[in-house]
Image 1 (cartoon, helix red, strand yellow):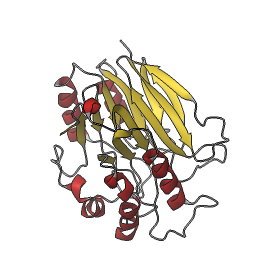
Image 2: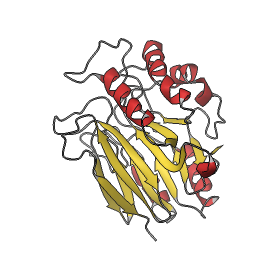
Image 3: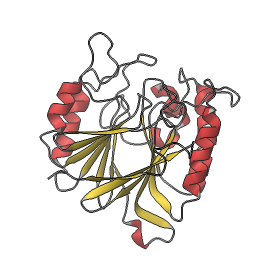
Image 4: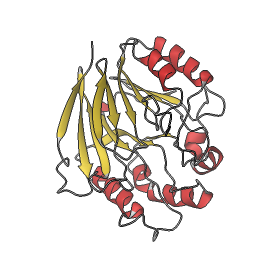
Length: 279
């Protein structure tokens, strides 16, 4: 568990602001592109914009698929080198794992993340406690390069107990794979999504689930709980989808989300969405 102290009195820190990134897909070689998308340049541009904020965010999340494809050490080495500006800003970084990640290589490269306690054996899970909300970061990686993911009974049991022990504060969950029931003909999300939803939906302190994986920017609801599909930093699957990062501000009864798209002419760029907490 990590605790983010009330940084409101700390000069230059916005204790209610979080930078949310997903699907960075950083290759081993900066010249590698996906179609017209330059993954290295996209991450650099997003981090430069975060660095230019009037106050630095209290934390930065990367929601899985840090490496481009196979999760090899060279991909992680390049990713770590690109993330250095965040460390220089002294902004804490938090990670989940996606289907292009490889746990051992991730832990070897991201040594601070590897040093955290592992409440679920063999999984990269964590709780980030802040004055306003608690973040629960889950690990849906089942097999590297396998499209669907799975949480598993042990992680679901841990999540149940962790949520019940922290029912006094809004809970935000971050997981890489999308938490929708799978299409049996083409499974792509969390294989045990129904068990996951059965845990979080009745626990009203859970206000939102953030996920990536689909390279789509979208917000929906389920029983008043927000489902936020984060856009990819790296590249879109469809040309109409934006790439970029999300500027998240936590308020007492809601949060605001602003897409910071690489293409500033995209119609979704800069729009602020207020998502109220369910009762």
